[in-house]
Length: 416
Image (cartoon, rainbow, N blue to C red; front, side, top):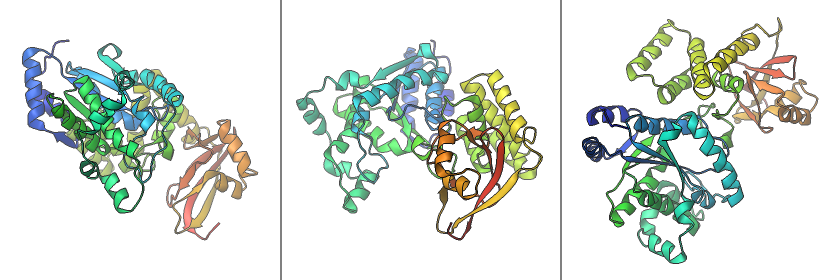
């Protein structure tokens, strides 16, 4: 593929939505060399298959890969089937239990399939870091470890906090950034992409390339996407995610649960909207020219169209309208306030529904969830331990089984 876009124009586009760029001058030089010689840059982004689903949080990063791809560069979707065995300590206050090889391999299969909902299959290299790390011998690990000091490792924020608070740090956790960094050496990466929480690891890769006599990669970080709760980063662990393999109905319904402010954040990080268009959208919502619900509907359609099809998007919107825009609801829907202690921020959905008498017991709620018979704002609840956040104003809309509906607010009050 010919590299036709001029380096300055490439750089302008690639910088959009980027938090860290180390360094801009170096990236521009690489883009110029690539353009003059018509040799694509090698762009690396790694994904540890710790869970079977890719979600929209991953898509923020994958979209940046797609930008490079459209400019004619080679993108490597690196599945960390070896690093997944170590367990990424990033952001952890305690040692993360490593996965088994079987768990990692099973999750890796789904990643290779799902990524092509965003990237072009014939222009994407899918690789596995076990390809070179499985060949490593004990002496190779010793040589690799000799390139970094404990003092440098303790500069990393999470390690520093654990060290100062006397929380244990296992030696194998120090290996994680070294192995991730060595991936860049093995691939001879020109650019590595990652979330802001990966900055330290990406810089280790840059340092190791220098040590191995390679031209150091440029580092680009993108923001971490907040999950549906608007608090934690999107993660299946927090059950606040939209998976790219969610059904059209669930994907649409989950998107409609976003707060108005978070919706704008999703527009910014997950669509092709320009900064000027985003500013106008924000202004139109503030002035009342556009209702935020309509913007949310458009965003939900955008996601379903991208990951399924235009027809699926239309059907999902029609289904949402039918059930949740008073077209499929009873004339009267029972409303409840569920009070929790002011010091608490959430409560188990099973406790809420059983206490309010909407289900006979917490066990019945869990059976409903297992049978995909409980919906929240148009999306099926899949986690039997799902928790509801406080919502002092807008109530949650539940569909319980096939015919029962309820509106519930979780509010501050007495202990229940």
